[in-house]
Amino acid sequence: MLDPFDDKDPRRAIERFYFAYRAFTAGADRLLEAQGLGRVHHRILYFVGRNPGISVGALIDTLGVSKQALNAPLRALIERELVFAESDAEDRRVRRMSLTEAGRALEAQLTEIQADLLDRAFGESGAKATEGWHAVMRRLAAE
Image (cartoon, rainbow, N blue to C red; front, side):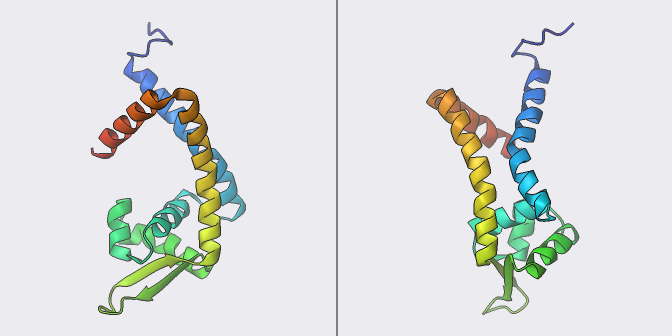
């Protein structure tokens, strides 16, 4: 039988990761749901906000999704005037995206919810734990 308090058990890490992710997304999910949006919309808003002028191709690469998977949620954000898309000045086939004022406001609210949660967790855990968390996240992201 597994000891539920054994931190060396990989299942404990999996469970903590699951419950942490659920807590991390819960507040943003509620705000998104009230807007009729979901996590895929949030990811688009976040990365377009972090990379104004990003091309559709670069966003596809960043998110690791297909063009087909990105099409409907991106179109919805453009129709709601949260994302602005325009053709590149040098290559008209390339679409560049930025957040509108409303898109920036929504993305800021979503990010604030999650940043506050992380700030509290990092503050209570200390610098060494925070450094360790970043190391683990970098390693997982590299997979």
